Length: 181
Image 1 (cartoon, helix red, strand yellow):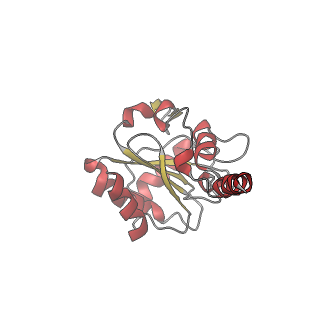
Image 2 (tube, helix red, strand yellow; image 1 turned 30 degrees about the vertical axis):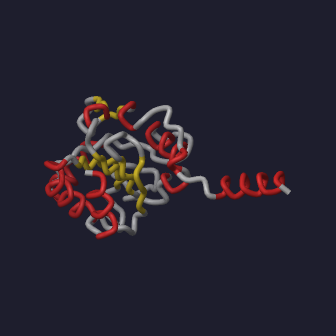
């Protein structure tokens, strides 16, 4: 009887495994990425800050979220939040080059939060940060579309993920940001 209980309990634990059990051999701060201007950004410069990582695209129906992302950046950057955009053509909705993306963001949305170069966010060619996110947080960390959001805490671990449909200024996301600041 005890053996059956142990086996049953083990099976139940497997199904309810959550991200707090992630091993995190590396944290977000162990990675780097090329900026939209061509310099290498070492994420360790964001240690002790929360980071909202968002894959973006210029021709997406969610592109208007840039306005809300800039608002978040302006409101919370002094409190320790970094909004970080990763332009991606993984869903075939991004401009052809970094210079055009940069101009588009600056002219249309007055974006001044950090942006990376155009980067793959899913599949085998995904940037290492997205492979890390999947490994440590599971399928919810894989962008299903543009403007998928990954919230990283001050320890460099994933706190939560949000779909493209979640507005950057939604109460749900703001609450999570304020929890970790």
